[in-house]
Image 1 (cartoon, rainbow, N blue to C red):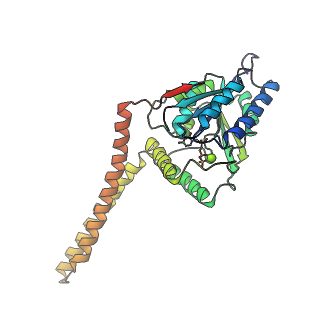
Image 2: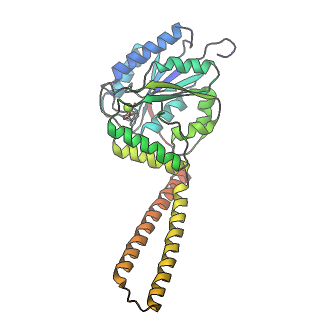
Image 3: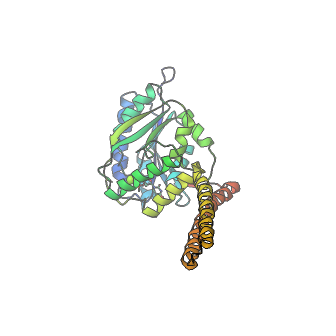
Length: 315
Ligand code: UDP
Ligand code: MG
C-alpha cells in the first residue's frame, strides 16, 4: 500500500482452448477478487484479464460474454496461438495496475494462495512465487520429467525457483522490469530471478485439472526445456569443447598404444577400431553441430527482432 491508497490488482490468465474450464475459472477468480476488494486489500479498479491465445473453440466468445456481464473482467485475443509464455507476456504488457498475479486457467494452482501473495506484497515483496509443496496430483510421468528437468537445468547453470510455474505476483515495477527484457525467445521463469527486488514464496498443493486436457503435450514441454536452457546458458557449447578435447586426447593415447603394439610385433586388427572411431567421432560431431545450430538459430531469430504477438481484439 502506498501512502494509504489501496493498490489495484490485475489477475492475468492465459487461455488456450479452455471453454470447458472457463466458467469455473471465471466464477472462482471473481469471488476472490470481490472478496479482496471487500476486505480493502485492493481497490475497485482491479480486474481479471483473460488472454485468449488464439483458441479454436468457444473460449473467446465466453470471454466476451463475461466482459459484457461484469465490470471486473477484461479480455484480449491474440491473432494466433503463440504459446503460454508469449500469451502471458501479452497480458502483462497490456495491464497497468499496481500488482499483477498470473495464473493458469485450469485452476491447478490453489487460488486461495492469492490472499497470502497479497499479504506478502503488503510486507514489501515485489515478487511472490507460488510454489507447489507437493505434486501428488500430477501424473508419475509429469513428476519424474519435472524433477529431472529442474536437476538438469541447475547443472546447466540456469537458476529457477524449483516447483514454481507461472503462478506469481509481480509489483508494477517488477512487471515493468520484466518487460524490458526484449528477447524474442522469452522464458519468463528464468528471467524473474534475474530482476532482483525483494521476493518471497507462498506454498500450496497443486490440484488436478478441473476439466479439459493439458495443453502442454510432451512436444511443448521439450521445447520449453530447450528454450529454457539455450536462452540462459552456454553450458552445452562448453560441454562440446570438453568432449572434443577428451576425444582428441583419447585418439592420441590410442595411436600411441597402436604404435607400441606395432613395434612389439603384434598384428592389430584394425577394422573394428576404425569403424568405432568413425562412428563415435561422427556422432559427437553431429550432436555438436546440432547444439551450435540451436544457438545460431536463436541468434538469427533474435536479430530479426520480430514482434512476438498481435492483439486481434480487445474487450
Ligand atoms: N496455454 C496457452 N497457450 C498454449 C498452451 C497453454 O495460453 O499454447 C495456457 C493454458 O490455457 C493454461 C496454461 O497455459 O491456462 C497452462 O497450460 P496447461 O494447464 O495445459 O499446462 P500444464 O499445467 O499441463 O503444464
Ligand atoms: Mg495445467
